[in-house]
Length: 218
Ligand code: 5GP
Image (cartoon, rainbow, N blue to C red; front, top):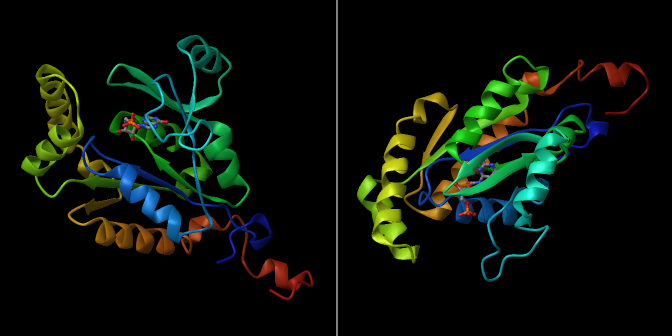
């Protein structure tokens, strides 16, 4: 599926957001495996790498001072404090790529999605951003997943559960809602959403036929 700038269209920014424990990272990884033309927007974070994570591939791991210098330089499309650490999307990872016709996947929290929504509201590129809320099959399942993976003390788990309950209330602010009951099914839903977004009229800055009248064969 051609989506570079020579196709005469902008890219799509697929924003996948939702509470911790909904399975965003797993579903996003799976989608990237089956969508070779989708670029993962590598976020910056001040948290430490987990085992198996690679700097520049999973995140850019920065000190708080380095992160704050980037804030001051205006490098971020959005940033937010999540569970005591800063996370941010670089403009050059997301905005610049979309402008040049690339499709980009953003795995960000609910605050970040809200900031992106506000930022692109009056921008022509805003029509290229698709917001997907990825939710757990139930609150009980979300609790089970958070407890299963976390090595955190009970009060931290309780705080995450309170945050998650609050975040779940924002699903109506999104374009699509996907329930992650099974990774393969949720990934297939995202694939369909991305496929449809690639054909949205807003994606074409000019008539798709203009190029043909200037001698291109299409
Ligand atoms: P984790 O530390 O488990 O990788 O991510 C914690 C949370 O931060 C997840 O909800 C993830 O989606 C979110 N996150 C990752 N990158 C960004 C980002 O660039 N901006 C925002 N706002 N959230 C992010």
